Length: 283
Image (cartoon, rainbow, N blue to C red):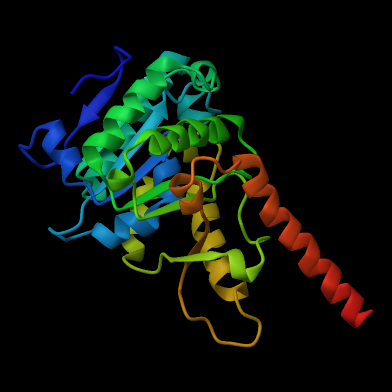
């Protein structure tokens, strides 16, 4: 398997399979911007496949993870040092989560933010064609992190280039740097992340360079999942111990003529209409 960037890392944990074979058996695939994004946004897919032989989760990290904040043990690390640490941490997560394959494409963020970057496009074309995954987890288009949205754009473009028979059955836009609690309930995709809480904690906790480096993603991720579960329904007891919200992006892949901007504004418009109708009725 050939990738565009010489620093790309390909890891097949606990298996003698070739990268191509490990990718080909993938049923659930996440394409994310940075190390640890996968474990925050796509735990639903990891849990769906964990401990099974008929389902396989695979992860793709598109960027090299440069520029992350750091303190404590990592305060004096160079950017190159941090990139190497983050690659190792992502490999550890792949072992814990029993991923079929973990790909780290190592593209600089600046390159990813160019929607016409041919190297990113070639890598994703190869990955999606080989994997033929049934379920794909991407960043959501209302995310407030530029690199996340740029990776989403590349991934959607690659999925749209696939023959119709190879496109996934379901594509989720997942929350990281803007949660999706604001979606009207009819637009929320409920991803139950209650299973294997010890595994869920370990997957986020393994990224010590981020946690000890000054960002408590472990506590924040668990707290957000619990908050979503509790605040989901005001007149019912909690149906789940943890929820991740997602947008259904499948229509954007099924119909490449749809505008991503118009599609996303539709969610915002429905939120506005929901608020306006309630205020009109009750005030």
